[in-house]
Image (cartoon, rainbow, N blue to C red; front, side, top):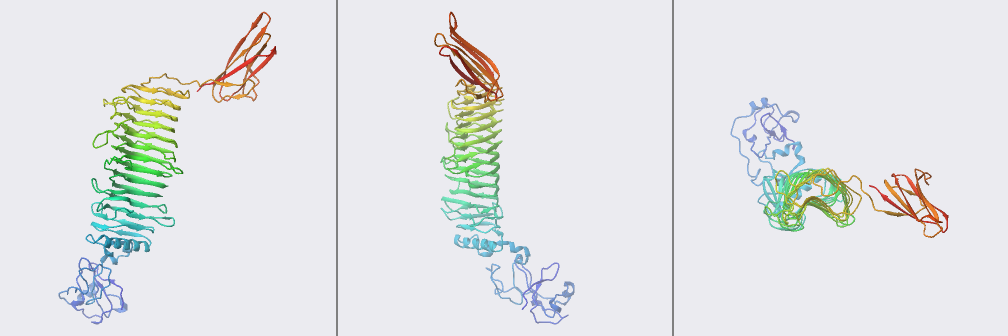
Length: 617
Protein backbone atom coordinates (compact mmCIF):
# COMPACT_ATOMS: atom_id res chain seq x y z
CA UNK A 1 0.00 0.00 0.00
CA UNK A 2 1.36 3.38 -0.92
CA UNK A 3 1.39 5.77 2.06
CA UNK A 4 2.39 9.04 0.37
CA UNK A 5 -0.13 11.87 0.21
CA UNK A 6 -0.58 14.09 -2.82
CA UNK A 7 -2.05 17.56 -2.85
CA UNK A 8 -4.91 17.97 -5.31
CA UNK A 9 -6.47 21.37 -5.48
CA UNK A 10 -5.64 24.99 -4.86
CA UNK A 11 -8.44 25.58 -2.38
CA UNK A 12 -8.60 22.22 -0.56
CA UNK A 13 -6.59 20.88 0.94
CA UNK A 14 -7.63 17.45 -0.38
CA UNK A 15 -5.47 14.37 -0.37
CA UNK A 16 -5.80 10.90 -1.80
CA UNK A 17 -4.56 7.40 -1.02
CA UNK A 18 -3.85 5.50 -4.24
CA UNK A 19 -4.61 2.13 -2.65
CA UNK A 20 -8.32 2.28 -3.57
CA UNK A 21 -9.80 -0.21 -6.04
CA UNK A 22 -13.20 1.17 -6.98
CA UNK A 23 -13.81 2.87 -10.26
CA UNK A 24 -11.95 2.96 -13.53
CA UNK A 25 -9.93 5.64 -15.24
CA UNK A 26 -12.29 8.34 -16.34
CA UNK A 27 -15.05 6.96 -14.11
CA UNK A 28 -16.74 8.57 -11.17
CA UNK A 29 -15.89 8.43 -7.45
CA UNK A 30 -18.40 7.53 -4.81
CA UNK A 31 -19.29 10.36 -2.47
CA UNK A 32 -18.27 8.30 0.51
CA UNK A 33 -14.65 8.35 -0.65
CA UNK A 34 -14.45 12.13 -0.11
CA UNK A 35 -14.35 13.35 3.47
CA UNK A 36 -14.77 16.91 4.69
CA UNK A 37 -11.67 18.64 6.12
CA UNK A 38 -12.14 19.70 9.74
CA UNK A 39 -10.12 22.13 11.82
CA UNK A 40 -7.61 19.65 13.18
CA UNK A 41 -7.06 17.27 10.32
CA UNK A 42 -6.74 16.49 6.67
CA UNK A 43 -8.20 13.63 4.62
CA UNK A 44 -7.09 10.86 2.37
CA UNK A 45 -9.19 9.92 -0.66
CA UNK A 46 -9.03 6.46 -2.14
CA UNK A 47 -8.61 6.74 -5.91
CA UNK A 48 -7.94 3.98 -8.43
CA UNK A 49 -7.01 3.84 -12.03
CA UNK A 50 -4.77 6.89 -11.97
CA UNK A 51 -2.02 6.60 -14.52
CA UNK A 52 1.49 6.08 -13.05
CA UNK A 53 0.24 6.97 -9.58
CA UNK A 54 -0.43 10.61 -10.43
CA UNK A 55 -3.67 12.42 -9.80
CA UNK A 56 -5.66 14.28 -12.42
CA UNK A 57 -5.99 18.06 -12.30
CA UNK A 58 -8.67 19.31 -9.97
CA UNK A 59 -10.77 20.84 -12.74
CA UNK A 60 -10.68 17.50 -14.59
CA UNK A 61 -11.64 15.39 -11.62
CA UNK A 62 -14.39 17.57 -10.15
CA UNK A 63 -16.82 16.65 -12.92
CA UNK A 64 -16.32 12.95 -12.25
CA UNK A 65 -17.18 13.14 -8.55
CA UNK A 66 -20.84 12.44 -7.94
CA UNK A 67 -22.65 14.88 -5.72
CA UNK A 68 -23.68 13.61 -2.35
CA UNK A 69 -23.42 14.22 1.37
CA UNK A 70 -19.98 13.61 2.84
CA UNK A 71 -19.91 10.99 5.52
CA UNK A 72 -18.38 11.95 8.88
CA UNK A 73 -15.25 10.33 10.21
CA UNK A 74 -15.93 7.55 12.65
CA UNK A 75 -14.56 7.44 16.20
CA UNK A 76 -12.54 4.45 15.16
CA UNK A 77 -10.63 6.65 12.79
CA UNK A 78 -10.35 9.72 15.02
CA UNK A 79 -10.96 9.51 18.74
CA UNK A 80 -11.73 12.57 20.80
CA UNK A 81 -8.51 12.11 22.76
CA UNK A 82 -6.24 11.43 19.80
CA UNK A 83 -2.98 13.35 20.16
CA UNK A 84 -1.96 13.33 16.52
CA UNK A 85 0.91 10.92 17.12
CA UNK A 86 -0.67 7.55 17.92
CA UNK A 87 -1.23 5.45 14.79
CA UNK A 88 -4.90 4.84 13.95
CA UNK A 89 -6.41 2.55 11.34
CA UNK A 90 -7.96 4.12 8.22
CA UNK A 91 -11.73 4.23 7.96
CA UNK A 92 -13.43 4.55 4.58
CA UNK A 93 -10.05 5.48 3.14
CA UNK A 94 -9.95 8.68 5.25
CA UNK A 95 -8.11 9.55 8.51
CA UNK A 96 -7.26 12.75 10.25
CA UNK A 97 -3.63 13.88 10.57
CA UNK A 98 -2.30 16.98 12.22
CA UNK A 99 -2.02 19.64 9.55
CA UNK A 100 1.33 20.83 10.88
CA UNK A 101 2.77 17.33 10.49
CA UNK A 102 2.53 17.82 6.72
CA UNK A 103 4.89 20.82 6.74
CA UNK A 104 8.57 20.19 6.05
CA UNK A 105 9.49 22.80 8.66
CA UNK A 106 7.58 21.12 11.46
CA UNK A 107 10.34 18.66 12.15
CA UNK A 108 11.98 21.59 14.02
CA UNK A 109 8.94 22.22 16.27
CA UNK A 110 8.10 19.86 19.10
CA UNK A 111 4.76 20.66 20.71
CA UNK A 112 4.67 19.42 24.31
CA UNK A 113 0.98 18.57 23.96
CA UNK A 114 1.88 16.13 21.20
CA UNK A 115 3.86 14.31 23.89
CA UNK A 116 1.02 14.15 26.40
CA UNK A 117 1.32 17.47 28.27
CA UNK A 118 -1.72 19.46 29.27
CA UNK A 119 -2.69 22.37 31.46
CA UNK A 120 -4.82 20.03 33.54
CA UNK A 121 -2.30 17.20 33.69
CA UNK A 122 -0.28 16.30 36.76
CA UNK A 123 3.23 17.60 37.37
CA UNK A 124 4.60 14.10 36.79
CA UNK A 125 2.78 13.70 33.47
CA UNK A 126 3.85 17.12 32.24
CA UNK A 127 7.45 16.61 33.35
CA UNK A 128 7.65 13.40 31.33
CA UNK A 129 6.02 15.06 28.31
CA UNK A 130 8.25 18.15 28.52
CA UNK A 131 11.39 16.07 28.84
CA UNK A 132 10.37 13.77 25.98
CA UNK A 133 9.81 16.79 23.74
CA UNK A 134 13.21 18.17 24.74
CA UNK A 135 14.84 14.80 24.08
CA UNK A 136 13.18 14.61 20.66
CA UNK A 137 14.45 18.08 19.79
CA UNK A 138 17.94 17.11 20.92
CA UNK A 139 17.81 13.91 18.86
CA UNK A 140 16.82 15.94 15.80
CA UNK A 141 19.83 18.21 16.24
CA UNK A 142 17.88 21.03 17.86
CA UNK A 143 14.53 22.71 17.54
CA UNK A 144 11.76 24.60 19.28
CA UNK A 145 10.00 22.93 22.19
CA UNK A 146 6.64 24.65 22.01
CA UNK A 147 4.34 25.29 24.99
CA UNK A 148 0.72 26.30 24.52
CA UNK A 149 -1.29 28.90 26.38
CA UNK A 150 -2.16 28.25 30.00
CA UNK A 151 -0.48 27.05 33.19
CA UNK A 152 1.43 23.76 33.31
CA UNK A 153 2.74 22.13 36.47
CA UNK A 154 6.02 20.18 36.37
CA UNK A 155 9.04 19.37 38.55
CA UNK A 156 12.49 19.79 36.91
CA UNK A 157 13.94 19.62 33.39
CA UNK A 158 17.36 19.11 31.82
CA UNK A 159 18.70 20.30 28.47
CA UNK A 160 22.00 18.59 27.71
CA UNK A 161 22.29 18.92 23.92
CA UNK A 162 22.63 22.12 21.89
CA UNK A 163 20.04 23.90 19.84
CA UNK A 164 16.96 23.49 22.03
CA UNK A 165 14.78 26.58 22.56
CA UNK A 166 11.91 26.44 25.07
CA UNK A 167 9.25 28.65 23.49
CA UNK A 168 6.05 29.87 25.12
CA UNK A 169 3.17 32.09 23.99
CA UNK A 170 4.30 35.18 25.90
CA UNK A 171 4.76 35.85 29.60
CA UNK A 172 1.03 36.14 30.21
CA UNK A 173 0.21 33.29 27.84
CA UNK A 174 2.42 30.46 29.10
CA UNK A 175 3.18 29.79 32.77
CA UNK A 176 5.31 26.86 33.88
CA UNK A 177 4.85 26.16 37.60
CA UNK A 178 7.39 23.95 39.36
CA UNK A 179 6.31 21.82 42.30
CA UNK A 180 9.94 21.22 43.31
CA UNK A 181 11.17 23.06 46.43
CA UNK A 182 14.95 22.56 46.60
CA UNK A 183 16.53 21.56 43.27
CA UNK A 184 17.57 23.48 40.18
CA UNK A 185 14.42 23.70 38.07
CA UNK A 186 15.84 23.95 34.53
CA UNK A 187 19.42 22.74 34.13
CA UNK A 188 21.28 23.56 30.92
CA UNK A 189 24.47 21.53 30.99
CA UNK A 190 26.71 19.20 29.02
CA UNK A 191 29.78 17.10 29.71
CA UNK A 192 31.76 18.53 26.78
CA UNK A 193 31.99 22.09 25.55
CA UNK A 194 29.47 23.06 22.86
CA UNK A 195 27.60 26.12 21.69
CA UNK A 196 24.06 25.95 23.01
CA UNK A 197 22.33 28.00 20.30
CA UNK A 198 19.20 27.50 22.34
CA UNK A 199 17.61 28.95 25.43
CA UNK A 200 14.25 30.06 26.82
CA UNK A 201 11.82 32.72 25.64
CA UNK A 202 8.28 34.08 25.91
CA UNK A 203 7.08 32.43 29.11
CA UNK A 204 6.82 32.73 32.90
CA UNK A 205 8.53 30.43 35.40
CA UNK A 206 6.97 30.26 38.86
CA UNK A 207 6.22 27.74 41.59
CA UNK A 208 3.27 26.21 43.40
CA UNK A 209 4.74 27.01 46.83
CA UNK A 210 7.78 28.36 48.67
CA UNK A 211 11.17 27.10 47.53
CA UNK A 212 14.09 27.04 49.96
CA UNK A 213 17.08 26.33 47.70
CA UNK A 214 18.23 25.83 44.12
CA UNK A 215 18.11 28.00 41.02
CA UNK A 216 15.19 28.45 38.64
CA UNK A 217 17.67 28.24 35.73
CA UNK A 218 21.18 26.79 36.13
CA UNK A 219 23.59 27.12 33.18
CA UNK A 220 27.03 25.52 33.36
CA UNK A 221 30.30 26.21 31.58
CA UNK A 222 30.04 23.77 28.68
CA UNK A 223 26.81 25.21 27.22
CA UNK A 224 27.83 28.57 25.77
CA UNK A 225 26.15 30.89 23.31
CA UNK A 226 22.47 30.86 24.34
CA UNK A 227 19.56 33.31 24.65
CA UNK A 228 16.99 34.06 27.36
CA UNK A 229 14.43 36.57 26.09
CA UNK A 230 11.09 37.90 27.34
CA UNK A 231 11.16 35.76 30.46
CA UNK A 232 9.32 36.34 33.73
CA UNK A 233 10.54 34.63 36.89
CA UNK A 234 8.32 34.97 39.94
CA UNK A 235 5.50 37.30 40.92
CA UNK A 236 5.77 40.33 43.17
CA UNK A 237 4.50 39.44 46.62
CA UNK A 238 4.46 35.76 45.73
CA UNK A 239 6.29 32.62 46.81
CA UNK A 240 9.99 32.41 47.63
CA UNK A 241 11.63 30.87 44.57
CA UNK A 242 15.18 30.23 45.69
CA UNK A 243 17.73 31.85 43.39
CA UNK A 244 17.00 33.13 39.90
CA UNK A 245 19.56 32.37 37.17
CA UNK A 246 23.07 30.94 37.60
CA UNK A 247 25.69 31.55 34.91
CA UNK A 248 29.02 29.76 34.69
CA UNK A 249 29.27 30.08 30.97
CA UNK A 250 30.20 32.22 27.99
CA UNK A 251 28.36 34.20 25.32
CA UNK A 252 24.88 34.05 26.81
CA UNK A 253 22.38 36.89 26.45
CA UNK A 254 19.64 37.69 28.97
CA UNK A 255 17.32 40.45 27.79
CA UNK A 256 13.80 41.91 27.97
CA UNK A 257 13.04 40.01 31.16
CA UNK A 258 11.80 40.45 34.74
CA UNK A 259 13.03 38.55 37.78
CA UNK A 260 11.00 38.92 40.99
CA UNK A 261 13.09 37.15 43.65
CA UNK A 262 11.79 37.49 47.23
CA UNK A 263 13.67 36.35 50.32
CA UNK A 264 17.40 35.83 50.91
CA UNK A 265 18.26 34.88 47.34
CA UNK A 266 20.14 36.14 44.29
CA UNK A 267 18.35 37.15 41.09
CA UNK A 268 21.43 36.78 38.84
CA UNK A 269 24.59 34.94 39.92
CA UNK A 270 27.76 35.01 37.79
CA UNK A 271 30.21 32.34 38.91
CA UNK A 272 32.70 32.03 36.06
CA UNK A 273 32.73 32.48 32.32
CA UNK A 274 32.99 35.69 30.33
CA UNK A 275 31.51 37.67 27.44
CA UNK A 276 27.91 37.53 28.65
CA UNK A 277 25.37 40.24 27.84
CA UNK A 278 22.57 41.50 30.09
CA UNK A 279 20.12 44.21 29.03
CA UNK A 280 16.63 45.60 29.60
CA UNK A 281 16.05 43.79 32.90
CA UNK A 282 13.81 44.47 35.90
CA UNK A 283 15.15 42.81 39.06
CA UNK A 284 13.17 43.14 42.28
CA UNK A 285 13.39 41.70 45.78
CA UNK A 286 10.93 42.16 48.63
CA UNK A 287 12.83 44.19 51.27
CA UNK A 288 13.62 41.03 53.23
CA UNK A 289 16.55 42.89 54.88
CA UNK A 290 18.62 39.71 54.57
CA UNK A 291 22.27 39.98 53.52
CA UNK A 292 21.78 37.18 50.99
CA UNK A 293 19.20 39.13 48.98
CA UNK A 294 21.06 40.45 45.93
CA UNK A 295 19.98 41.63 42.51
CA UNK A 296 23.24 40.93 40.64
CA UNK A 297 25.91 38.85 42.41
CA UNK A 298 29.26 38.54 40.62
CA UNK A 299 31.55 35.98 42.22
CA UNK A 300 33.86 35.29 39.30
CA UNK A 301 33.84 36.55 35.73
CA UNK A 302 36.29 37.53 33.02
CA UNK A 303 34.25 40.27 31.38
CA UNK A 304 30.52 40.89 30.87
CA UNK A 305 28.28 43.76 29.78
CA UNK A 306 25.22 45.16 31.58
CA UNK A 307 22.92 47.91 30.29
CA UNK A 308 19.47 49.37 31.01
CA UNK A 309 18.85 47.38 34.19
CA UNK A 310 17.08 48.15 37.47
CA UNK A 311 17.90 46.25 40.68
CA UNK A 312 15.62 47.36 43.52
CA UNK A 313 14.35 46.26 46.95
CA UNK A 314 17.16 43.79 47.67
CA UNK A 315 19.75 44.06 50.46
CA UNK A 316 22.45 44.72 47.87
CA UNK A 317 21.39 45.87 44.44
CA UNK A 318 24.75 44.71 43.04
CA UNK A 319 27.47 42.84 44.91
CA UNK A 320 30.91 41.88 43.58
CA UNK A 321 32.69 39.44 45.90
CA UNK A 322 35.33 37.03 44.51
CA UNK A 323 36.74 34.40 46.84
CA UNK A 324 40.40 33.41 47.16
CA UNK A 325 41.76 32.36 43.78
CA UNK A 326 38.91 34.07 41.90
CA UNK A 327 38.97 37.26 39.82
CA UNK A 328 36.26 39.64 38.69
CA UNK A 329 37.56 41.70 35.77
CA UNK A 330 36.39 43.83 32.86
CA UNK A 331 32.82 44.27 34.05
CA UNK A 332 31.10 47.07 32.14
CA UNK A 333 27.83 48.59 33.38
CA UNK A 334 25.98 51.34 31.55
CA UNK A 335 22.74 52.98 32.70
CA UNK A 336 22.28 50.48 35.52
CA UNK A 337 20.08 51.57 38.43
CA UNK A 338 20.57 50.19 41.95
CA UNK A 339 17.88 51.99 43.90
CA UNK A 340 15.91 51.62 47.14
CA UNK A 341 17.85 48.65 48.47
CA UNK A 342 18.02 47.97 52.20
CA UNK A 343 21.77 48.51 52.62
CA UNK A 344 23.77 49.39 49.50
CA UNK A 345 23.18 49.97 45.83
CA UNK A 346 26.64 48.67 44.87
CA UNK A 347 28.97 46.75 47.16
CA UNK A 348 32.46 45.66 46.06
CA UNK A 349 34.14 43.68 48.84
CA UNK A 350 36.49 40.90 47.69
CA UNK A 351 36.67 37.89 49.98
CA UNK A 352 40.41 37.38 49.38
CA UNK A 353 39.89 37.52 45.60
CA UNK A 354 40.81 40.24 43.10
CA UNK A 355 38.77 42.96 41.40
CA UNK A 356 40.15 45.04 38.54
CA UNK A 357 39.15 46.82 35.35
CA UNK A 358 35.52 47.61 36.34
CA UNK A 359 33.64 50.43 34.58
CA UNK A 360 30.37 52.06 35.65
CA UNK A 361 29.05 54.60 33.16
CA UNK A 362 25.99 56.78 33.87
CA UNK A 363 24.72 54.52 36.64
CA UNK A 364 22.26 55.50 39.39
CA UNK A 365 22.66 54.68 43.10
CA UNK A 366 19.91 56.32 45.16
CA UNK A 367 17.77 55.96 48.30
CA UNK A 368 19.61 52.91 49.61
CA UNK A 369 19.09 52.53 53.36
CA UNK A 370 17.09 55.75 53.25
CA UNK A 371 13.96 54.56 55.07
CA UNK A 372 11.55 55.60 52.32
CA UNK A 373 8.99 53.45 50.50
CA UNK A 374 9.63 50.29 52.49
CA UNK A 375 13.42 50.69 52.44
CA UNK A 376 15.19 49.95 55.73
CA UNK A 377 16.39 53.12 57.46
CA UNK A 378 20.09 52.90 58.34
CA UNK A 379 23.02 55.28 58.61
CA UNK A 380 25.06 52.41 57.11
CA UNK A 381 23.14 52.75 53.85
CA UNK A 382 25.41 53.61 50.95
CA UNK A 383 24.92 54.35 47.31
CA UNK A 384 28.31 52.73 46.68
CA UNK A 385 30.65 50.89 49.05
CA UNK A 386 34.15 49.59 48.23
CA UNK A 387 36.19 47.82 50.89
CA UNK A 388 38.78 45.09 51.49
CA UNK A 389 42.13 44.46 49.85
CA UNK A 390 42.22 43.22 46.28
CA UNK A 391 40.54 46.20 44.56
CA UNK A 392 42.76 47.75 41.89
CA UNK A 393 41.03 49.66 39.12
CA UNK A 394 37.38 50.72 39.46
CA UNK A 395 36.16 53.64 37.36
CA UNK A 396 32.95 55.66 37.66
CA UNK A 397 31.85 58.04 34.90
CA UNK A 398 28.93 60.39 35.63
CA UNK A 399 27.34 58.43 38.48
CA UNK A 400 24.21 59.82 40.17
CA UNK A 401 24.47 59.13 43.90
CA UNK A 402 21.50 60.69 45.66
CA UNK A 403 19.58 60.54 48.96
CA UNK A 404 21.23 57.48 50.50
CA UNK A 405 20.97 56.72 54.22
CA UNK A 406 24.65 57.36 54.97
CA UNK A 407 27.58 58.28 52.72
CA UNK A 408 27.02 58.59 49.01
CA UNK A 409 30.17 56.59 48.26
CA UNK A 410 32.70 55.20 50.73
CA UNK A 411 35.97 53.66 49.53
CA UNK A 412 38.44 51.89 51.83
CA UNK A 413 41.64 49.90 51.21
CA UNK A 414 41.43 50.25 47.44
CA UNK A 415 43.88 51.23 44.72
CA UNK A 416 43.13 53.25 41.58
CA UNK A 417 39.52 54.24 42.09
CA UNK A 418 38.43 57.12 39.85
CA UNK A 419 35.29 59.25 39.87
CA UNK A 420 35.02 61.37 36.74
CA UNK A 421 32.01 63.66 36.68
CA UNK A 422 28.75 62.84 38.37
CA UNK A 423 26.43 64.13 41.07
CA UNK A 424 26.43 63.49 44.84
CA UNK A 425 23.66 65.20 46.77
CA UNK A 426 21.15 64.67 49.57
CA UNK A 427 23.08 61.84 51.21
CA UNK A 428 23.18 61.34 55.01
CA UNK A 429 19.40 60.84 55.07
CA UNK A 430 19.44 58.60 58.16
CA UNK A 431 22.13 60.32 60.21
CA UNK A 432 22.15 63.64 62.03
CA UNK A 433 22.57 66.36 59.48
CA UNK A 434 26.19 66.61 58.41
CA UNK A 435 27.33 63.28 59.90
CA UNK A 436 27.73 61.42 56.60
CA UNK A 437 29.27 62.86 53.45
CA UNK A 438 28.93 62.84 49.69
CA UNK A 439 32.29 61.18 48.95
CA UNK A 440 34.47 59.44 51.55
CA UNK A 441 37.98 58.18 50.77
CA UNK A 442 39.65 56.11 53.51
CA UNK A 443 43.13 54.56 53.33
CA UNK A 444 43.28 54.48 49.54
CA UNK A 445 46.15 54.94 47.11
CA UNK A 446 46.35 56.36 43.60
CA UNK A 447 42.77 57.62 43.44
CA UNK A 448 41.20 60.55 41.60
CA UNK A 449 38.10 62.72 41.86
CA UNK A 450 37.67 64.94 38.82
CA UNK A 451 34.85 67.18 37.65
CA UNK A 452 32.21 66.05 40.15
CA UNK A 453 29.50 68.02 41.88
CA UNK A 454 29.01 67.07 45.51
CA UNK A 455 26.67 69.43 47.31
CA UNK A 456 23.29 71.07 47.03
CA UNK A 457 21.71 70.96 43.59
CA UNK A 458 18.83 73.04 42.23
CA UNK A 459 17.40 73.91 45.62
CA UNK A 460 17.10 70.29 46.77
CA UNK A 461 17.63 69.55 50.44
CA UNK A 462 21.21 68.53 51.12
CA UNK A 463 22.24 66.98 54.43
CA UNK A 464 25.79 65.92 53.50
CA UNK A 465 28.48 67.07 55.93
CA UNK A 466 31.36 67.48 53.48
CA UNK A 467 31.29 67.17 49.75
CA UNK A 468 34.56 65.21 50.01
CA UNK A 469 36.07 63.68 53.14
CA UNK A 470 39.69 62.45 52.85
CA UNK A 471 40.93 60.04 55.52
CA UNK A 472 44.34 60.12 57.18
CA UNK A 473 45.62 57.00 55.40
CA UNK A 474 45.20 58.26 51.83
CA UNK A 475 48.25 58.64 49.59
CA UNK A 476 48.99 59.59 45.97
CA UNK A 477 45.71 61.22 44.92
CA UNK A 478 44.32 64.00 42.75
CA UNK A 479 41.23 66.14 43.32
CA UNK A 480 40.60 68.72 40.64
CA UNK A 481 37.98 70.66 38.73
CA UNK A 482 35.12 69.83 41.11
CA UNK A 483 32.30 71.69 42.86
CA UNK A 484 31.95 71.09 46.61
CA UNK A 485 29.81 74.12 47.45
CA UNK A 486 26.78 74.21 49.75
CA UNK A 487 27.30 71.27 52.06
CA UNK A 488 26.30 71.37 55.73
CA UNK A 489 29.85 71.50 57.13
CA UNK A 490 32.16 72.34 54.27
CA UNK A 491 33.55 71.50 50.87
CA UNK A 492 36.64 69.33 51.47
CA UNK A 493 37.98 67.87 54.69
CA UNK A 494 41.55 66.70 54.03
CA UNK A 495 42.96 64.68 56.92
CA UNK A 496 45.77 63.04 54.96
CA UNK A 497 49.41 63.59 55.89
CA UNK A 498 50.90 62.63 52.54
CA UNK A 499 52.69 65.19 50.43
CA UNK A 500 52.10 63.23 47.22
CA UNK A 501 48.75 64.76 46.39
CA UNK A 502 47.20 67.43 44.21
CA UNK A 503 44.10 69.34 45.31
CA UNK A 504 43.56 72.13 42.82
CA UNK A 505 41.03 74.26 40.97
CA UNK A 506 37.96 73.25 42.95
CA UNK A 507 34.99 75.23 44.25
CA UNK A 508 34.34 75.02 47.97
CA UNK A 509 37.87 74.17 49.08
CA UNK A 510 38.76 74.50 52.74
CA UNK A 511 42.39 73.52 52.14
CA UNK A 512 45.30 75.32 50.52
CA UNK A 513 45.43 75.03 46.73
CA UNK A 514 48.87 73.92 45.53
CA UNK A 515 50.09 72.70 42.22
CA UNK A 516 53.23 71.19 43.79
CA UNK A 517 53.84 69.47 47.08
CA UNK A 518 57.08 69.03 49.04
CA UNK A 519 58.04 65.57 50.14
CA UNK A 520 59.68 64.77 53.46
CA UNK A 521 63.37 65.31 54.13
CA UNK A 522 65.41 62.20 53.35
CA UNK A 523 68.85 61.58 54.85
CA UNK A 524 71.62 60.83 52.31
CA UNK A 525 75.33 59.96 52.44
CA UNK A 526 78.23 62.16 51.27
CA UNK A 527 80.21 60.57 48.48
CA UNK A 528 77.28 58.52 47.14
CA UNK A 529 75.81 59.16 43.66
CA UNK A 530 72.00 59.56 43.53
CA UNK A 531 69.58 59.73 40.60
CA UNK A 532 66.79 62.25 41.27
CA UNK A 533 63.38 60.52 40.82
CA UNK A 534 61.61 63.90 40.86
CA UNK A 535 62.54 67.54 40.96
CA UNK A 536 63.93 68.38 44.38
CA UNK A 537 66.50 70.08 46.56
CA UNK A 538 69.80 69.08 48.17
CA UNK A 539 70.90 70.61 51.47
CA UNK A 540 74.29 69.91 53.04
CA UNK A 541 76.08 71.44 56.02
CA UNK A 542 79.65 71.13 57.22
CA UNK A 543 80.99 71.42 60.78
CA UNK A 544 84.53 71.59 62.20
CA UNK A 545 84.21 69.77 65.49
CA UNK A 546 87.81 70.29 66.70
CA UNK A 547 90.33 73.15 66.74
CA UNK A 548 92.57 72.89 63.72
CA UNK A 549 89.96 71.19 61.53
CA UNK A 550 89.56 72.49 58.03
CA UNK A 551 87.60 71.25 55.01
CA UNK A 552 84.40 71.60 53.00
CA UNK A 553 81.71 70.11 50.72
CA UNK A 554 80.90 70.45 47.04
CA UNK A 555 77.61 69.65 45.22
CA UNK A 556 78.08 67.98 41.82
CA UNK A 557 75.06 67.81 39.43
CA UNK A 558 74.74 66.77 35.77
CA UNK A 559 73.52 63.96 33.53
CA UNK A 560 76.59 61.77 33.98
CA UNK A 561 77.17 58.98 36.43
CA UNK A 562 79.13 60.03 38.39
CA UNK A 563 78.41 63.75 38.00
CA UNK A 564 81.44 65.99 37.40
CA UNK A 565 79.99 69.50 37.28
CA UNK A 566 80.21 71.56 40.50
CA UNK A 567 77.08 73.56 41.33
CA UNK A 568 77.62 74.75 44.93
CA UNK A 569 80.25 74.57 47.66
CA UNK A 570 81.03 75.61 51.23
CA UNK A 571 83.95 75.27 53.67
CA UNK A 572 84.94 75.63 57.33
CA UNK A 573 88.25 76.68 58.93
CA UNK A 574 88.99 76.34 62.65
CA UNK A 575 92.65 77.41 62.42
CA UNK A 576 94.28 80.40 64.14
CA UNK A 577 92.36 83.44 65.19
CA UNK A 578 90.10 83.48 62.08
CA UNK A 579 87.86 80.46 61.98
CA UNK A 580 84.46 79.24 60.73
CA UNK A 581 82.98 76.34 62.69
CA UNK A 582 80.09 75.47 60.28
CA UNK A 583 78.75 76.22 56.78
CA UNK A 584 76.00 74.96 54.46
CA UNK A 585 75.05 74.72 50.80
CA UNK A 586 71.74 74.42 48.97
CA UNK A 587 71.06 73.32 45.39
CA UNK A 588 68.17 72.40 43.07
CA UNK A 589 68.14 69.14 41.10
CA UNK A 590 65.88 68.20 38.19
CA UNK A 591 64.29 64.79 37.83
CA UNK A 592 66.64 62.46 35.97
CA UNK A 593 69.86 64.21 36.96
CA UNK A 594 72.65 62.62 38.97
CA UNK A 595 74.00 64.35 42.06
CA UNK A 596 76.61 63.80 44.76
CA UNK A 597 78.11 65.69 47.70
CA UNK A 598 81.92 65.49 47.69
CA UNK A 599 83.61 65.95 51.06
CA UNK A 600 87.13 67.45 51.48
CA UNK A 601 89.23 67.19 54.64
CA UNK A 602 92.08 69.70 54.36
CA UNK A 603 93.54 69.86 57.89
CA UNK A 604 93.18 68.48 61.38
CA UNK A 605 90.88 65.55 62.06
CA UNK A 606 88.62 66.53 59.17
CA UNK A 607 85.10 67.88 58.98
CA UNK A 608 81.65 66.39 59.39
CA UNK A 609 79.22 66.62 56.41
CA UNK A 610 75.45 66.02 56.75
CA UNK A 611 73.31 65.64 53.58
CA UNK A 612 69.52 65.81 53.00
CA UNK A 613 67.29 65.41 49.92
CA UNK A 614 63.74 66.79 49.68
CA UNK A 615 61.59 65.78 46.68
CA UNK A 616 59.11 68.11 45.03
CA UNK A 617 55.86 66.64 43.64
